[in-house]
Image 1 (cartoon, rainbow, N blue to C red):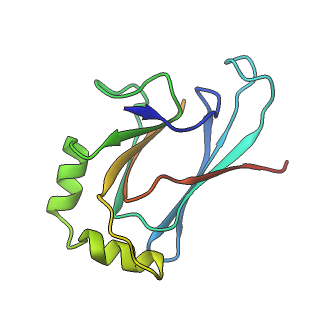
Image 2 (spheres, one colour):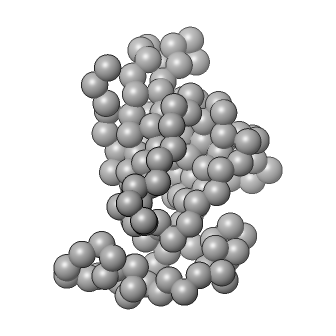
Length: 133
């Protein structure tokens, strides 16, 4: 498990948006008093996702509970469920990213917030950037 973001934990969930027919945008906000010095907002964007799941319980039985964005790897129950119900092969997903296609394994990314736990199946991690207020 790898922490891949410096967003202060735990952020509040602001919004989730499906981009086009295959992307995902999650906006989170730092919560002053929970270790964050400000109330900065961040956007996490995946250009292509195979699937995602939003759980109302932000306290999982396993996985991260002290980081905002984590790469859980390629061998999780969530990922097995998504891939067993999808026709998305690595070459096909790579082609959706645009030329030149470079096949990569689908990975399980997890975003932990105070409001929800979001599981994402994608070949690459999100682009993360601060948003102007």
